[in-house]
Image (cartoon, rainbow, N blue to C red; front, top):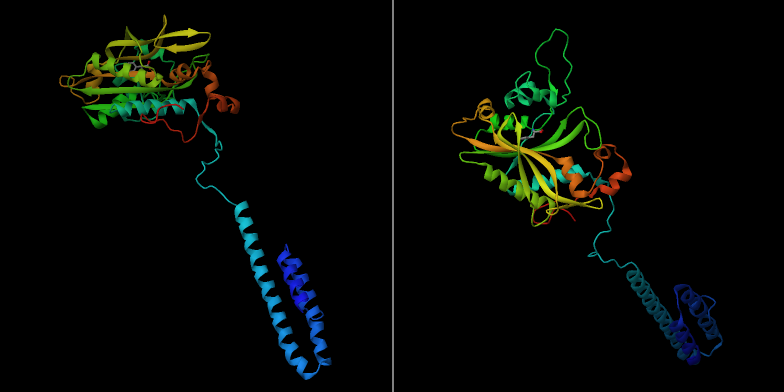
Length: 357
Ligand code: PHE
C-alpha cells in the first residue's frame, strides 16, 4: 500500500496540467482505479484483516483526493499568474498618436496672431463678410467715386433692377470691423479682427478670397510710437526671433492719417527666408493713425480720442513663416499639401507653451 501511495503522490506532483490530473484521478481512485480494485479485495479478507485494511484504504483514497485537489488549485493559480503577466499593461505610457486631419496653416497662423495680441490686451472683434457700403467704404472715409474704391477690385452683390441703393459687397478688407467695434463699444478700445476678405484678383500671391487681421487701439494719447512698438513686439513673437527691424514707409490710406506701410528686414538664402537680418525688405502690412473722420463716423469724439489701426495679410504671414511659395495652393484642398504644411490638431499655440512645435 505504501508503494501505491508513493506512486500516486509522485504522479500528482509531476502533473503539468488539469487533463493529466484527471487521468491520474481515474487511474487511482476512479471506479475501476487501483484503489477501488484493492477495496474489492476486502470481501475476500477475514473480518480482522478487513478492520485494518478498510480504514487504511479509505485514508489512502482521501489522501490521493486531497493531493489531486491541492495540485489542481496550484495549477489554476499558476495559469492565472501566467495570464496576468502576459496581459500586463502600463497605463502610464503616453498614448500612441493618430492623426485626425491637420490644422490648415491659415487657421494656425490666425491662432498664433490672436494669441500674441491677446497677450497684449487686444480682444477679438467680428463683422460680417457680406458688408454694406457704409461700413466697407463710406465710414472709412472712402466716399462714392473715390479712386480707392476702384483699387479694391470689389465683388458686388446683386441688386434688382430699379433698386438704386448702394449694393452690398463682399468686404474687401477687415477695416469695416473698426467701425462696427467703435459703434458698439466706444472708446477706449483695443481690438483685433481676423477674418476672410475678398477681391477679384488671382495670381501666385493673390486669391479672390484671403485673410487679414485688423488691429485697432483707441485711447486719449495713443501715438505712432505705440504703433511701432506694438508691431515690433508682434513680429518678434510671431517670427520667434530675438531681433526684428521694421521700416515705416509713408503711404496713403483714406482712413488713416498719417499712413505707413511697414516692411520687415529679411534675407532670401536659396529660397529660404530669414527674418531680422539681410538686405531685403518685405512689405507685411498697412497702418496709420485713425483718421478723425473715421472716429466721428463711428460715434467716437475725435477731439477726445485718437488711436492707431493696422491691417496685416494673414496668408502672407503664413507664407513667410512657413516657407510656402504659392498662395493659390492654400485653397485647393489638396490632401498631400495639407499633410505637408498642416499642423497637429490639439497643439494649439500659447504664449506660455510656445507658438510652434
Ligand atoms: N485695410 C487696408 C488694406 O486692406 C489695410 C489697413 C488697415 C491700412 C488699417 C491702414 C489701417 O489694404
